[in-house]
Amino acid sequence: MSNLLSSWLWLSRFRSSTSKYSFYRYRTLHNTHLKNSPTSSNLLNSHTTTKKNPCWSIPLFLALSAGSLCLQPHSHPSFSDSPLTHTDNDTDTDTRDVSLGGKGSTQYVVKGSQKEFPQELLEELKIICEDNVSLDYDERYIHGKPQNSFHKAVNIPDVIVYPRSEEEVSKIVKSCNNHKIPIVPYGGATSIEGHTLSPNGGVCIDMSSMKRVKALHVDDMDVVVDPGIGWMELNEYLEPYGLFFPLDPGPGASIGGMCATRCSGSLAVRYGTMRDNVISLKVVFANGDIVKTASRARKSAAGYDLTRLVIGSEGTLGVITEVTLRLQKIPQFSVVAMCNFPSVKDAADVAITTMNSGIQVSRVELLDEVQVKAINIANGKNLPESPTLMFEFIGTEAYAREQTQIVRKIVSEHNGSDFVFAEEPEAKKELWKVRKEALWACFAMEPNMEAMISDVCVPLSHLADIISKSKKELDASPLVCDCPCW
Image 1 (cartoon, one colour):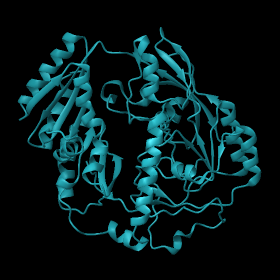
Image 2 (image 1 turned 90 degrees about the vertical axis):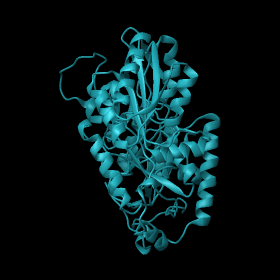
Image 3 (image 1 turned 180 degrees about the vertical axis):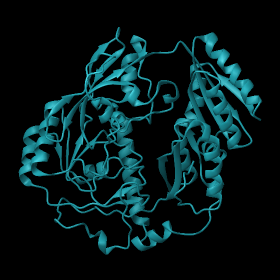
Image 4 (image 1 turned 135 degrees about the vertical axis):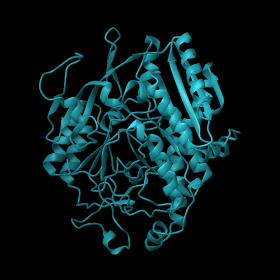
């Protein structure tokens, strides 16, 4: 399992009507794409064009954890549209004029090979999971071709299984290990960096059927959950108890995948990343053994810190089957603020000054002028099309308002303008909607492009410089470039 290029991003599926809509939208885009796809050689040429693309064509939205986005032509051919029949040789990609990428590569195809799937293993999986095994091509295609991932794989999973318990996961992994068949744990459909690709085919372990809250300890402020539960579902469950889980990545992300990718989200600036909010894990290793990494005690100095080792391992060490999470009290009061700047550097300087002033900011996000333009186009808004900072302050009512006014003064000292803030729930939700829908707004502005998303992390003191240098570089570079696309 350690040789899998596919990492495991347990991003949970959009459920009920949302999942149906996502499926319909995906198939529609795929069908349209197949009709309009150029040949492989034409596609390669489209990715190596030397036509310059000015900086204003690159939308920007980032948190201080520094996510980056670059738009690319949406015209990738499919390489694995064949049914469940394979050979021991590499796929036929060698005969096509296409470059294949590897770990850390910016090439759009992840190389791999596939062999015939053992019928004996298929029968074993059917015994273990009963009716929760799928060979449906469309279902396998969606699991193996993440909708919004720039990277593609030459193959898709051979089989999808939906385990309902830790014991079933253990048996599945043990059987796959015996037959030397790769596995890819999967939460569902929100991956944007190719984490759930199956370049070597194999078995996709969809964890969406394991989404129970197993135990809530209000006094200890922790909760034990299955990996398939989404963070949004969990917070709905916790709200009546006055508690919440503070990490907030993309809508639909599941707890298991958040552990596997050591996610952060916009609240990481105050609460830390997944590494700081997981107390213990239960993991199925490659031989099928089930291991608990720690107890619920907050303090422990006994042995290896296996919890932190597994967090961020992206499916290369084991399959997470249980997570114990640290919880927080729901803040009494919050204020959301937004302000504009003449340049991205001015906005970045304000973010740095605010952090260094000791103010307990819970969120801070930066959008450049092109990203704001995309939001205006997509949502019919009339926001000033200039670099924009968004803040959230939490605490008691007096404390949150005091922080807001301090930051307002900092903004005015750095050429900021149009400082507005909201305290009412609906108004705050409307302001944050601007950031949450940034990716979809980019698609609306450039419908024939797709996003290439990555993370670029620098020390806080280097933030303004890296943003300025990146945008200057983009002004003199083609659309496809190796530099960070903020």
